[in-house]
Image 1 (cartoon, rainbow, N blue to C red):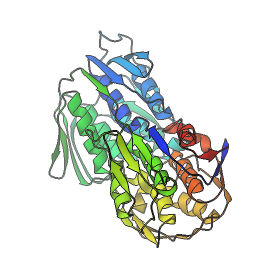
Image 2 (image 1 turned 90 degrees about the vertical axis):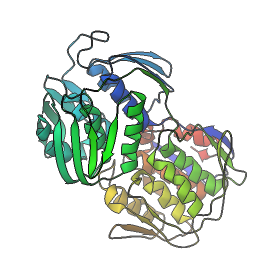
Image 3 (image 1 turned 60 degrees about the vertical axis):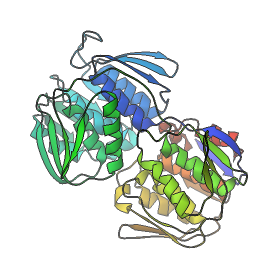
Length: 423
């Protein structure tokens, strides 16, 4: 699918999609809980639907009523839920979080499990699980460190030492699974990437009565904990909100009101407010949400190491600045849906924009963009960023735009409702 996006003036208000990051974590805990979990405002993104299919495959019974889910967990063969044996093939779609989070969770079962994926997920490394799970009693067989993965458990818990790990998603999966093991799990990690995402996991754990601890040099979770029932509404997605906020900062003289955001459960991409402030964007917090106004963008320098999903949209904001901007953390971009550092350089060059990667920094030189045909690289965040670039600068035809369904299925409808010209 291709879309053509024209320079646009935005105004009005909109509600952001619900957080797929929080929603998938809720499903993982609900799977391990013998009691009822009710999740309200469950998002309909592709990644969330894959995660929902996974917990069903592992024995959870799910009743859906619109965007409300009633879940009875399936571990271990919970008689209140489903006494069937779990299906031994689990399909993760293109969701990196689902694959890395549910791999250790699936290894809790006695049955042999196979995790499969498709598309860009098959290019993403699972080496960390290959190294960690054997220390916890699980045999793992991968194909060149990637999916498909064959797991032979059950996991019994223990201690893992690692100098570094390239994704916090592995930590999330290990900690969630650890609460259901007999021994519990202690992780000694020299370097924790994207630690705010682990904070998200720990906050969601608390909703189910599960305690996880940050200890010196890593994390710890006691085994044999009791999962309590809970009823929760999924928070708005700060990752999705970032695209709307930057679009408003570039295109909305009268302002755009962004609704549906909370800060009770921390999300890494709340850092977008920090960057908007650095860039001298005018924004106000109201009773209804955050109102963002078109502003003259000041060049900024920001370290996105712990919130790498902001990189593409910050690279759009930088193009509109009053001087070169620097975004740090390029090493976090290689193992996403695309190699985002290279993808940004390649597509920005088509529009006449000069970018330089030196070490771990991306430097972007502002310039009036040229109309062009660009490609999303099968990456939802690239597709949405290119859309905002066009609205703020010059007409772009974006190829592969359908990938926005991964996290923000109605992204184009939302932008049109605010006044964007999209065909």
